Length: 86
Image 1: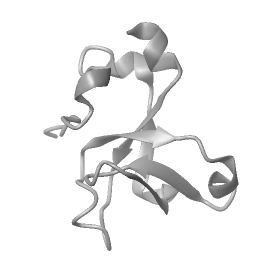
Image 2: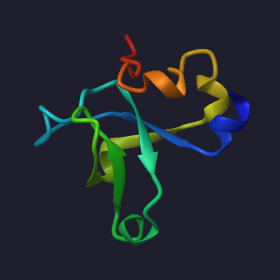
Image 3: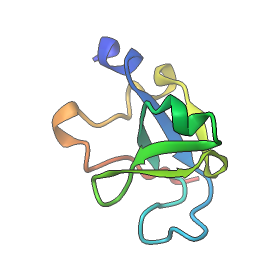
Image 4: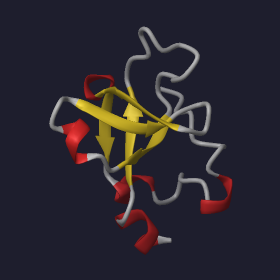
């Protein structure tokens, strides 16, 4: 699982303004690499629909994989992403 974590990026949603049906605040999402979009301040995230869409990077903060190791869902259970209770 550790090898899997190093190949993937995760972000924590801080704000879902304009996207309440697609994003949940305090939820961790898998980020898909898209260098062109990132150069324009956008990131591609697999949202609540299970599909990847572009969102403003300012809505998220990156999460270090080492901090998530014990909380991440398995590769077979990604739909149950974590909703952090802060």
